[in-house]
Length: 222
Figure 1 (cartoon, rainbow, N blue to C red):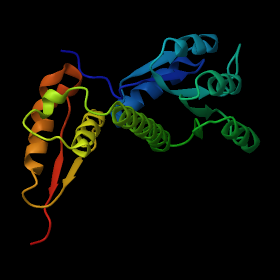
Figure 2: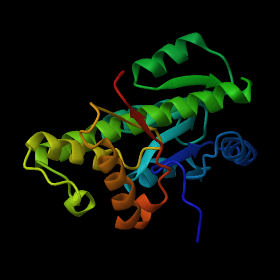
Figure 3: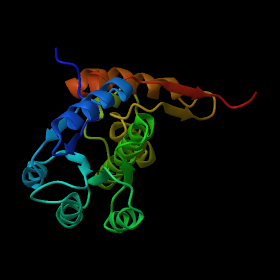
Figure 4: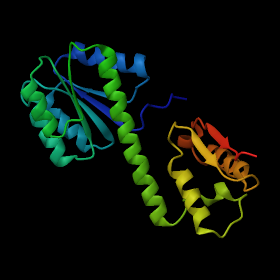
């Protein structure tokens, strides 16, 4: 079985220097376990690649032949507003950095910056995008009025719309690697909810089978 790609969405790195592309890709994988990466040496191919979908983050070189990183950034802001962009430039220019941030860049780095700074910036962008997607998923599930897989919670008998909202929320955040915190009074069934989350989502499909559920049960003081 092929290992799952991290993150769930693709990261597109656009740079006309093949050595830099490969170096950054290897650094992201070795330092942060980021493997869902696509490399693009020709700036003219960046937007067509984005059109294929599931690219959440673009790392752009600023100075490239054919189309500059700044032009691509402006086009992404207009055509793919949900896609985050990080600019990486070979030179430090304050006015250019300010202009890129105004165009919507998530962050701006210099190629000579320490690897940890660049990797940290990529990780922050990934987490921001994951939170945005989780929030949208929660909103959609709650608007829909319940979980898409109610069989995962079959052991919990309830007619409460509030509880069905809780089921929908758990289902929506299922793909998140973050811990799941369950609180409540003693005897309300926290363990049943946790058991339903674990057993239900590990049997529904391949994408949720890989989840690393970390559940924190918080009991009220006695």
